Figure 1 (cartoon, one colour):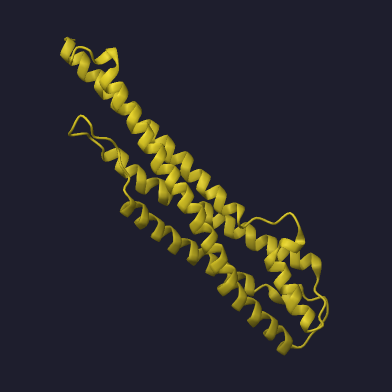
Figure 2 (figure 1 turned 60 degrees about the vertical axis):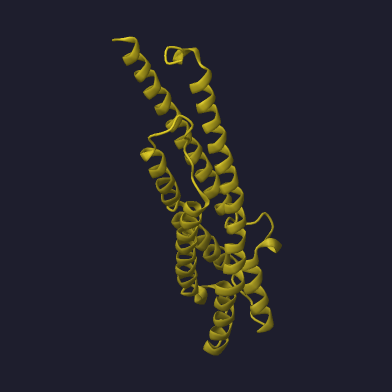
Length: 219
């Protein structure tokens, strides 16, 4: 192998290492984002902080109805578990979209680095938000089908319908909007971290490329 061939091979290895490092940043950043989102759904440490249960209990209290606490807990826990499972699958959407950019990266200029621009991030976030909204709505609809199981005693259908209507309205308006707003905030923070991490990795890549003795032959 000639010196020139060896140099080209080293440059390829350096590029491959760089791309793998960026892939790692994307993977870890996305896993962190999904964990942050799931933290918004999990059961709060105190029942008084559980907005879903609190809303149902307050609606039942207005109607002077006692709820079956065990059935209520089971229903709400199942809602959270199912929603968590569905949202975990969204991890691949964000990872795959960004990793395509990395896979396609072949620098044409000596100073070129991998860049994930804000338009691409906005497009991915729009799709994620759409998918999250669909999953939340679907799981709320499933939750509504279980409401009949939480009553401790026989009550009139009118009262059941009244509680169900008010509760589902709350879940599809206030609860869902607050959740989506919180997710948007978590996403914005992770997007900034992602951009910063990728830029820093690009700077390391260029610094090594321009200053390492491995590339002295080219100089």
